[in-house]
Length: 163
Image (cartoon, rainbow, N blue to C red):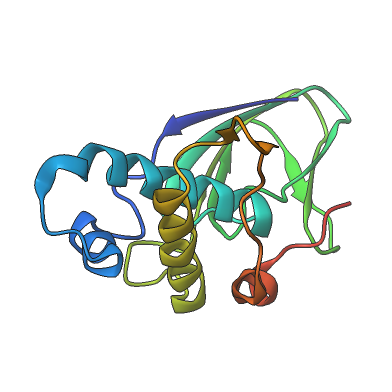
């Protein structure tokens, strides 16, 4: 199985102005850094939840008889194919191709307005942590991990079980 992103998200679940307001940043000097942190927080939220936040399109190539779990590409908005496929009835769903197939899958919650508020809030908190802890090394203490807190529970209702 090969999965390729063909149409990336048109925007991010948070705007630069929302992130700057949360961070209490007034100057434009850190805009590029903050935009990069927004992307990093979205990517991390997508990984941790197993779901895509903003509408995007993926192309999946399956060989005959191959099964592909769709965790990481949920929620599904639409699926098209050039050959037969089925979705099994399990959760998370699995694509099964009867013959070799190229499947185009549109996934994501939608636009900025449809991303769950708890995920957006988690992203703001993660961006704040990443902004505050820009360096991963300290000569005195070695590599330090980003702090984890109860805020990570904001993602719990949206996590897709991994098989």
